[in-house]
Image (cartoon, rainbow, N blue to C red; front, side, top):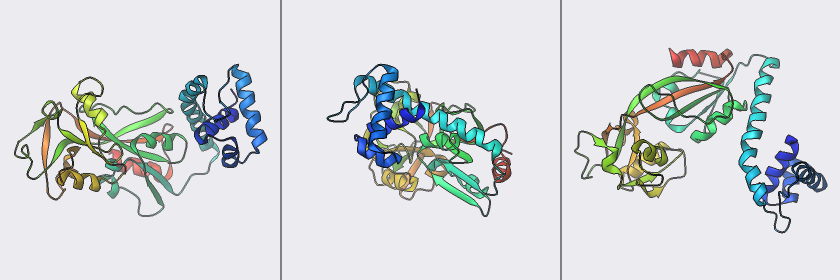
Length: 290
């Protein structure tokens, strides 16, 4: 498959319009139609209906592959571009919200840094495609276990920090006086669903070992990356959330009760391409991993 044709197909499917895809990609509408026809001819299958413009069943299946295929191509191009590029004097850092702990922030260079806060699942892609020199990503893991990251490209992941996690409860909650809490005792509680600002509920379900979709019901969904808002929602009684103990302990009007079982930690890892970073990226890597 020609990657240019594949990218055109993805854009048409996303926008639901040949003319819209032409504007987005800087092509003529005729060129977009030719790309789609060539791809359909190559695969021997119709991929898009025309009125309305919607993927066929075969097109839907191709879309499941297309994102990762195009990401891999972009990652390969970015990886090879490093050999021709001059050493950079600036640093582009992508980070998930909970990865930006006091220690990581204190280690940043005084100047020349561009920091982008991204949803957790987008950090690996930013590093792989060269949009960021380094990535900081966080998640739940068993002590000393690596994070389970998307397989978007050959990336190196290095441990930065690990710390216990705590359940954040309103100060007047019946469980606020407990010395510790088990996930098994909280399956039927109402939780805040904040996949970008907090720790995803599907990870809690997986850690609990229950069937898919069982328990940990959503009381309120927060679509944003501000962990302070998440903590304030928990303190106001809109649902429980799980946070690193150092952050949970700072939330006004809330009580942080340590999670006693299963044994889980909040882990932060540093991501980079290639064997060794260079320039400011190398210095930040050294500061964070000593």
